[in-house]
Amino acid sequence: MSGPSQDELAGLDGLGASSGRTGSNAPTIVVEKAPEPRAPEGRTIAQRPTTQDRAFVLTARGAAVSTLVIMLLIGVFLTLGAMPAFRQQGFGFLLENEWLPEAGNFGIASLLWGTFVVGLIALVVGFPIALGAALFISEFAPRSLKKALITLTDLMAAVPAVIYAIWALFFLQEQLLGVAQWLSTTLDGPLGFLAVAVPDSPSSYTSSAFIAGVAVGVVIIPTMTSVMREVFSQAPVGEREGAIALGATRWGMIRAVVLPFGRAGIIGGTMLGLGRALGETIVVFAIISPVFDFTTNPLESGTNTIAAHIAIRYSESSGIALAGLLGAGLVLFFFTLTINTLAGIVVSRSRSGAATEI
Amino acid sequence: MTTFDTSVTEQLPAVPVSAFKPAALVAESVNAWFGTHHVLADVDLTMAAGEVTALIGPSGCGKSTFLRTLNRMHELVPGSSLSGRILLDGEDIYDPARRPIESRRRIGMVFQKANPFPTMSLYDNVVAGMKLTGRKITKAETDALVEHSLRSAGLWEEVKNRLEAPGSSLSGGQQQRLCIARALAVRPDVLLMDEPCSALDPTSTRRVEETIRAIAGEVTVVIVTHNMQQARRVSDHCAFFLAAQGQPGHIVEQGRTEDIFERPRDARTEDYVNGRFG
Image 1 (spheres, each protein chain N blue to C red):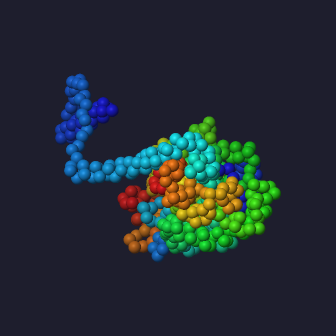
Image 2 (image 1 turned 45 degrees about the vertical axis):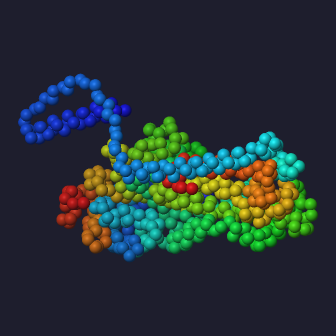
Image 3 (image 1 turned 60 degrees about the vertical axis):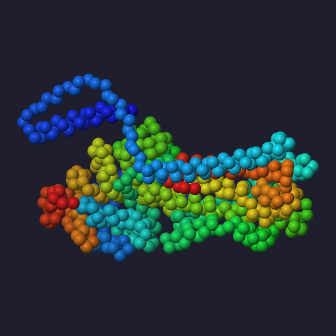
């Protein structure tokens, strides 16, 4: 590495010296004496940091390392705390539907299913709205409206989840009962698993994964919108104008330039939303019934997610039951960490996401 | 990216079409503003069919703005406004009854910075305009169109064996010629070029200039350039723009290129084309 740069420097040096000489003494032709061959000496590039430099670097490095250490400690704490439950249940911890720690029989299979279904429904509800909102804000909204909408979505992301929870409990739940009933009875034929035991009773639908999922979907809309809008707004002006100058409609330009450019942002924002949905606690807690009855039918009352289950049970749990909750927490911790990391990788590896923070 | 909005569908004759019919473009007392800033005043200019018209002048004299009024790109800038008429074969492109996208289809544009669609293949880049405007042609016609457009832009020989490579894989000069091919593929009547060579090396510049000379006659070319030699080499007509202090840009002198360079009537034109300012 240091070889060529040494040669280059030597060459430049010789050039500068000779031109200086011819400049002062124009007619004379100066013959450079060939330099004696000598082995170039390596030189280490170093600079002495000042005290302020050192203090700044140490502080910044310490802060960066501490976030990693805290994450690691959480993981270690959960693992250690969950060990008794893992040791007792083995793989059954992931496969068991029931939660009867007193009887020595508990697992998170139904919780995993509930978490998955609620997350999926949240995405189905939230994704189209978030994508449409992001496109509208970045491509269609007039300039005056744009700023207001950006602020509004950011504010929505900052509203505490418990506000969404009471809204879901006192407003959304009631509104969705009819929808759930209609879906269940209409789709009964082709999708028989959606049929509920007592179709006429509203309480058959009140605490379903469907209603919890829609509520969580609303919660994750601002986050997804924000990431997607940020990426869309970075689509290069040159390419946009190129498409428009070819005679594209605005929608044609969006399909040819903005969406391909923002693909990673769409994927990353969605995964970020999914991560948030899987961990959403209070909104699910408000909707689901506190009893541990479980159904795979997303329209029927009786669902639970890992996060909501921990929130419901932790105050009354001790010993092996508490270890079980910590084990469930570890699984959730692992899932969300993986999904968020993947989202970060997808976004930052793409052309559009290099400058985006999520 | 193979499916696009197909709101406008029309049948095209098989390519290559031997007879392009270039159209004259006439600007009548065009004024342009950005907000309250008056950047262009009373520009009257006839850009003759099938000829190359060069717009020259120092930076900030409004020549790029004028170019962008010619295919309705100016109005995309928030806060911009405009007066006057632009006649394409006698019809005002700002007529409320005409959709802007119709005008842009007939008046293509090549930008200062090459802007191929980086994720599309070279092939898809060339036919992007056809897809974006919803025109359907057969695979064989598309193949012929791609070859014809790339040949016109002087790029065919360099890329014919890697048409599936992405648009971003080309060098700067090749990307600019790809953009020319892309603009030619929709078979415009007029091609606007906004300093197409300002970011290119001398060899690529020469190739683009050869391309301009080759397509002149098939299309009407309007080119903005800072390079006097280039204006002299490629253009038939020249219009010299100037914006004095606190005054909007306007045309000082226009005429046949050799007249502008050899026998300028205005002292400012003479100073500018001889490199004494700007």
